[in-house]
Image 1 (cartoon, helix red, strand yellow):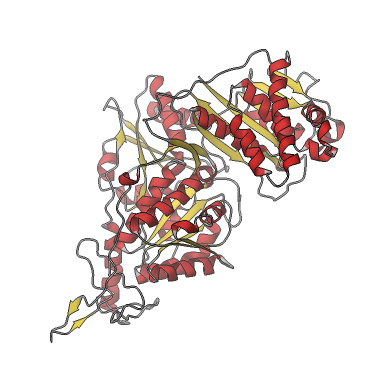
Image 2 (cartoon, rainbow, N blue to C red; image 1 turned 60 degrees about the horizontal axis):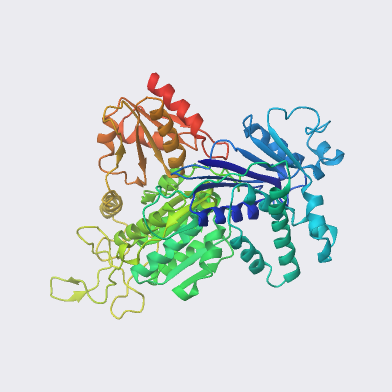
Length: 611
């Protein structure tokens, strides 16, 4: 009913492409799925070494699943480094497909193998399938007139064809993709197609693979609708475009390339037909400065980055707080501090988003929980920014950004109406009856100030970071006014309308609550299912809104004897929960650049319940 496959090889072996194609065909077949790409930070890590190993894990099933899986049922190892780097995750009895052509003396010596693991008995507990992938690929392509090196590059397609046969994946989509990808090099395109078909035929004819498997479509896991496979960064990009259309505003992205956020810039640059403007700035500061200028000019303004970029953008975020203009600050979190682990995931920017500016500069914070949820969370963040005239943080992370899952394409009529009214004339009457424009006169419900597009006659007003007088917008050094402005900006954020926190507690008598945020949703939910299946009671709640918290959070926390907070940091949400609600929240943390495994979380929850 389900299987977990991990493709692993050198960072030049095309493992991400292989995994992506298998994922696309799996999505078109109708399975539920979840993926975990894992690759080096270097553009080209040393070939054949452990730091140079790139992998792609895919979990697919005929039912609802939530994570890429704890351990692969099938490992495809393209070289000794890939085998050694991943063997520790592979359970006994699993299948391992190895490219025997790479298990020669020099590649094995690079990773510390004195003898071949294929011959010394160390793999006896596994079902090992030795396949000379390189040799078979070169033989399959001998009539194409390619050099040996060129032919070798197609061995990932041979492996993809073999796995596609093993699990009855469709093939038409991959062949069409290859011909489109290499349209300018038809010989290379047909060579890759031939390698792909050769892998399929090898699986069908060799005696080593006597059994193939079919994981049926997950027909009961999804409501009716049209679905596609989507990654978190792609869903986020589509969310931004949808938000701009629903707000009837042009979309402007001011950004600087940074892993793992760059794909948003790449994707949005393809959509000029939707009124999208993308600006690749010379640095992070220029990127957000341009975005804030676009917000002043009446656009839905966005800047994308990761933790190191947030540090550089902090002064301009503070300026946006002072100017009270809508701005989306999208932080795709990665391992830190400093440059840290650019291609690995982490949730350690929460306190930076909450407090990482000089002065009292509060901003709302929204966090998606799955790759597909990045679409809805982006619309939510845009709603808050536009309605309350404030910068808003959207905290995704590398796991969500690069991972993928099925996404139900929404109907346009189901999307929220995000339209706002620009101020077009005077909004205040002085004591002598004169009509004037006050740039800081507030909406009594949202405390938002008016949004006046530059060039509108009669609406000239001052901008800048120096404190303004409430109402008039004149520069003010008055202590009482500053105190008032600080408190009203805080009150505006505190007053942002967010839904109440929903609690999943089927029996209603659990005494332990597991509280999460962001990308921990999948592993936590999978762990909760395991704990409940074992007969224990545990409640689950997951936060999308981290500032302000849902109004009922305090009551929810008070309903349980124990609160466990799993996070991919050293306990940042737990710190906030303890400070705001005086609850003895227990942290369960990990900062190894990888998402939680459901098994380890289930064990931690069991321990908390029994304690």
